[in-house]
Amino acid sequence: MPLSQQHTLLQELESIHQAMDAPLDPTTHDLLHQAAQLEKWPIAQLISIFERNNTESLIKRHAITRYMDTHPDLFGKQACIFGVTGTPGAGKSSLIGELCLSLLEQQPDISIAVLAIDPSSQSSGGALLGDRTRTQFPVNNKQVFFRSQASHLDLGGMGKATFHVMRLLRKFFDVVMIETVGIGQSEIEVQRLSDHTMLVMQPLAGDQVQFMKAGIMEVPDTFVINKCDEDALAKKSRHLLKASLKLAQIHLSGDEAEQAIFMTSATQRKGIREVAEYLLKVCSVDRPDNFDEQEVYFRNKWIREAYGEFGLGVFEHFKDKAELSRGTFEEKELAYKQLMANFLTKLK
Image (cartoon, rainbow, N blue to C red; front, side, top):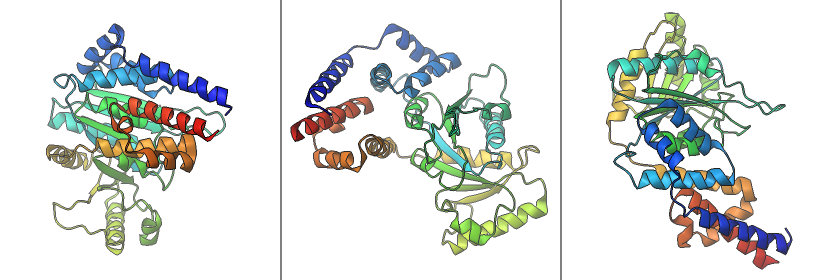
């Protein structure tokens, strides 16, 4: 980039920095307070702000985050986040729909958000966003919110905007479920955003060797064999899975084991209540706030995608600078962009 363009970029970044000092605008302020009451349209509008990748949205994300952080009485929740992954056709969407209904039956005052990630087309770039058709929630029930999101061809089972949306939803709901695209054996990034990860499988999805080479068996905290309408096949699959976990030295022992295997049928509502009870038990345990670790992971991912390994090396060299670790994610992102622009200018 020519030196004149570098100076122009620095000026633009400085103007963005100044714009971020402005208070939250009245319209967004009203949206936030309505969203705190679980009004669906305001929540959807706020999510759209967090999904967009432009300067205006960056400034608004910063203002919204700063406002929520300074009003913990209204936005003090720390949702229990469940990641749900698995191959296509395993019944993830149907299972999530039934689990949400069962959670509401057992704990009527619970609030639940579902974020379903759909694969984007390699040709058109569009996404069907059709998982909503498989979930039937009570009409006008504010306690259940569903949102589809395109993956934008991002590997890892989630889109680039998923992290930003989770920053928002975790402040409004008691439980948030993330459903990955389910395109193969690499959807392990959901573990970075989840307190608890579930792998949904079909009966006879493979033998011990197939299970072990999948590369995803070390990720889940819970295994769910769904579509267990036929008991014999379901029990055989459960036996194969337990044997695979033992061979992979992922041991299951007793009721308090970190990993658990459930057999369910979304169509017959078989085993759904047991899984819901287990999830509520997970939520009842005090959980560490791992947002800082999530932020570091997705910050590094963004730097690597935007600037490559060179950019990540520059950050590591200057990571002790206070502005790179202070404030909202947007402030840190802007500080890094300014650092990178200054660094490249000095190289000229």
